[in-house]
Image (cartoon, rainbow, N blue to C red):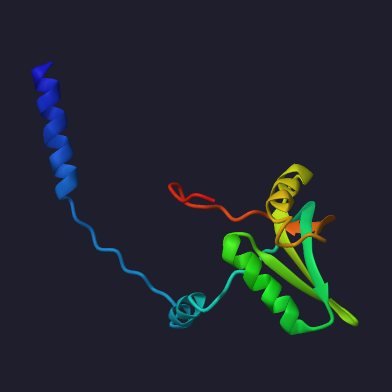
Length: 136
């Protein structure tokens, strides 16, 4: 048994010490393509699903809408807001809620700040993934 183990060790070290030369022949255009690979950007993926948003505010003045957005952002900086324009009004909506219950919870918290807000069903963005340790 010892002789067998010794033979394996000798064979393994002799194979490890064997050196061979490998010659790579390639077209010079390959280096150019490899250099261009870093410039290629993946397509933007904007997957949307059916969900809910809270319509906070609408007005024909963009400045009023921006003030409303600032008030909401001061209280909820991690909830995204969305502005749309449908002549003659701007609409401010907030959140990417997958369930009506999630939207109702935030709506109840902001009822004093936005008393005329209501929940709308529309396509939403998938929620952002937070790193562990971050509170949402």
